Image (cartoon, rainbow, N blue to C red; front, side, top):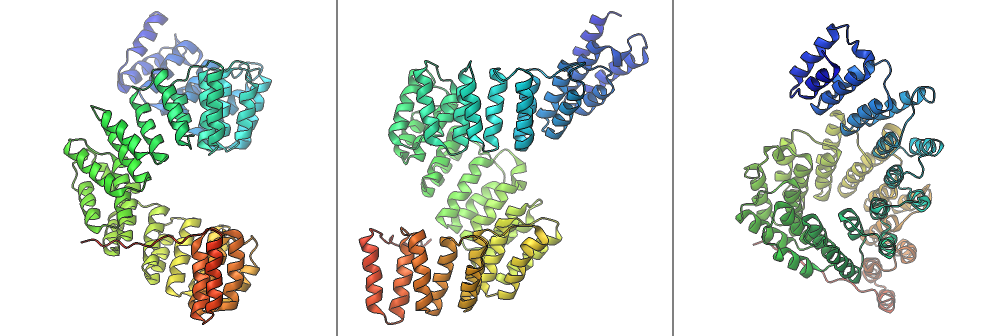
Length: 556
């Protein structure tokens, strides 16, 4: 049988069983000596990969006596697509052992390995691979350089990503998109916008990727208008993904009117479009409008996905409406959204727990929590925080110990939740024990939020001197949260002298916060020091600090 016929039979195999049958036949035939026949081996491995059988592909690759660079690239690509990033790096390490005598990595190998480093956020290994790129003469390859920029962006090294970009001699539109994306993902918005205008000055026509990235950088309304004119001018205004991004760009700038005009102008609205507008309302703190739009979407027969439902649940959390909360919960649990897996979706169920907590129904929150098949540390933290907010520190502590027994390792956010619960319930000893256990048992270094919880814990229980001593012994500089906790405790226990000291520190750290002035003024007033209280009010006025009017929500 000719080799071309064999390869054709391999490529025409449409299922795993038929391919394994052909493979077994060739193994029995000593004529072909499969491990040595690189062409047949490569086709077999490629077909195993196309049939999603990575394990068979890797087993065959491991038995291949002299794999070439193409075959290495093939198996590294398969591992990368299967999110087996460590295997990618191990394969690369094996390839290097064969270099330079037998094979060497090429401009297809490096982007794959660099992407694996970025996914693992391994800066040290990423820079090492970057060195290999330079040594092998691929530093000027645009495909490799674009991968390097993306990797450095993921490890928050924007400076190195920019150096890679600046050294490129042949930048294409993907290069510009990559560096603007790095700036967008790392909060360097102005730099991203400036680079976009520079790209246009160099006569590079933007594609969808570039405009999507630069829209994430827009912080000013005039910039949004200018970029929209560019999008329209280059013929991308009819692209649905771009349209959705334009809506969100205007919504982020507070231009919900403009976002809604775009939305209303679309004749055939798909799920992504509905979800984008609902998200826009959520981000603009317009929960009622988000819920109304969700109802419209359902009436149009559009089936929501978990992202849409997540935004709707968050809107209910902002509205504090138990009625709406139960309605949305019913929509999720009773089906009609096309995906039964949503009922067991961790993020969605955690959002439901948070929603019920904020709506004041711990009973409903606990029911959702108990029915969840899978819980992560955020789920536990949300429920523990809920008990703390409602003053049930005992239930919060009990849940914390249940979490420990379930082998879920607490993180720094969960400790904020449980320490806050101890503070609100007056569990001083338990709180101190948990604070000490953070480092001793879990290796978590306390952050200023944890110190603020401890100051609040001690202060609320009347141990103001201990709280002050705790602040003075902190290994990090106390921030506004720490001094704010002490000031709040001084208000509870009418300690004027300590309140004045805490307030002075706060006025240096957080001078624009009206609450600090109001609390100190109230401390003076409750102690009969009316002149001092008036002085603080006058200071607040002279600095242009205004107290926001309070409001109450009542559900009827």
